[in-house]
Length: 223
Image (tube, rainbow, N blue to C red; front, side, top):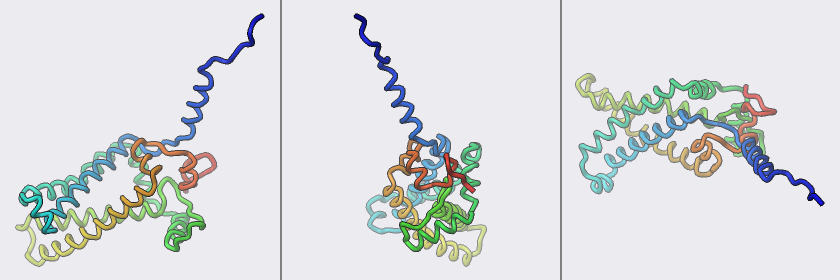
């Protein structure tokens, strides 16, 4: 007597793989992730070398001040390189347009965040208002840091009072930049799925729909 036919063993595996694939949403391309990593590495070199220059215990521990100064100068000058190379990527340029667009839903997000209202509405597209403010502030801070750093480096092209003012702005803005970067790292550590998106390029669909409901997902529309 013939036994009843059974489905091929590959069918459940295929269904599981399809379900797993649809549960992930592509968030960043490879070029976008490399721009972020390269910028982060250069920024880390800037901050670490600055700390070795201005904090006496670290300066004594590391030594070789001339080398540290050279690393600090060139890592700062090269900060723009990943950004400029990233402009060759269509995906990167698209994200720049999103970061540069501030809509009514971003004001709602900011009000809820400033009030620490966890239950209030926080509508966001691919990037929320906090990320947009951070990106804008960081871009401006880097430009000021590079400009004041050049005035301090090329001493023959500026009068003494300009160099003195540049040193004051550079030092205090560096401190503010360190605090903001530490807060950025802290937020990333508190959100594993966001870190996974930057590491692998994709995020969980449920996370995307919850944190970025106006992103281009089924049922959502980014203004």
